[in-house]
Image (cartoon, rainbow, N blue to C red; front, top):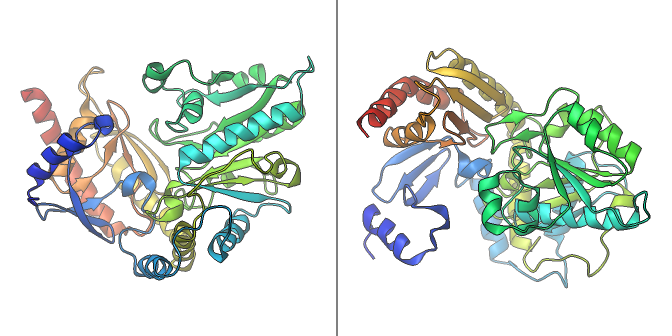
Length: 416
């Protein structure tokens, strides 16, 4: 097979299902915060595999851990367990400061972690019937939410374009605005669970309103519902803390379940659901949920190495410092209307010539031509989620180039 990028992209079109559209590049190598394509061009990756490559590419500690484990034991099924899975569960419970009686379930992705959480909500609804004595089946989720693409996680996801081709989806989900008023109006004794992202990444990096999560915790307790927090994108140091939830709940107050994935494996597929406390951890019993690959020794070894690197190299602090530096520099650009920054999860709203103009996708294309990988979450919004190892100097190169990138994007739109 030829190593020409165009030929490889044509091979992709000829042989792979087109659910992702046409890929922009064939990437062949990564090192640190840079990736290289099949033609040898190098890019500064400001997207990090969509918040996945938390410690960058080919980190020596991660490579060593994965290589060593692959040479010992990769997969055993969940008829058995391994020291690696047990160790990772300990790490997650410790870093989240989960109370006694909390447990971990390992999956392969964020969607699967959220599927487990949806089933947890169903079991809770059966264990704690509503006012009519029947099982509660109602789940509240938020407008602009994204929880995954499987049928259950898609039911929790708000975006109509994702949902419509697959309806009818699993029922009982009500999407409400992210406001305390809407929460107070909808959360009652018929609700089995509320699921929220503390920072909505897919919609352009929007944090929940002040006091929303704390009020949600009060109301879910009052009405006997679960509070499930989706930290798939915002967790594992992305916002400068292990969990974005920490900044939004009083100290010592926890949700009932937390879902994780993306940055947890440092590039290796793994997801997790943490059930908080003994009562919630007893809802799913043997045979009620499972996975063939979830939590295998190779995946859990990769995740443990990732967590160790984040801790040992002070990457939580780096996310805070470099994220704030990058946001301040972006805010100084006249082409930028607003920056929403939470650690190294950043949404940039661009100044558009007209509301109809789809500037952000054109900026993504122009940025790629200039050697930067970013993505658009809407017509005028760009998202950045670089590896947590990125330096201020590396982000400065992007900020310096962005005005020219935007000019090129405008020119391309004008000529199209």
